[in-house]
Image 1 (cartoon, one colour):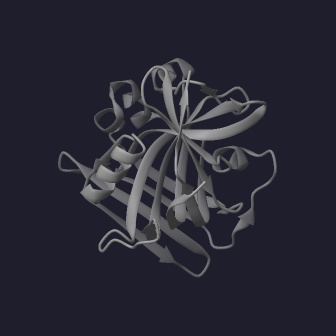
Image 2 (cartoon, one colour):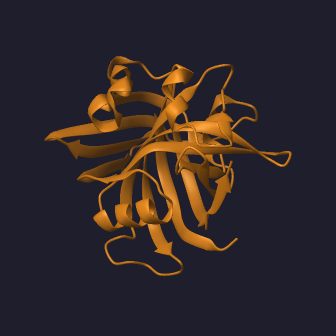
Length: 238
């Protein structure tokens, strides 16, 4: 499969929430099923940086380094006996309109363009990653302070469940799904010391997610990330 996009995903702040699976059923793409962790259904709020981005080998001016924040959940697809674990994005937020146009057109994703900024800071024994995005004059944010020394992800852990999904699935309609592969090595994570999430979930993602504004995450991770490659997509039909 040809590579559509190459980049680095760096300093991924992931806040993970347990949610009633019934709230996600209308978003589940055809031929996929919800993927649970210890019988819990998760959605994750993820903020990170795209760095050194190129599309089909070309770097587009002003679209090489930029923030992204997304709300996603987890699915599986049984591909003729091969179980593929993937993510479905409820919405992805980026700061450039051209990114939204390409992603919505090529992959049928639900992207939105908003003002964004980020702040990274390294201290003597900790590091900080903060991501901000503005809607209706309010700056939403996810902020994480973590230990400076990274750790390997433990097999069969919650961190592995959240980070080790190598496929993306998009609901085109009731019977058609877009599938694409994301290649990257296994990541490391920084133990989180504290965090703060200030997000108007209802305004950003729909009224069914409003309750997350006052919900505490089940867990929060900070992953270093890596170079990634997004492959050209396929269409799956029921």
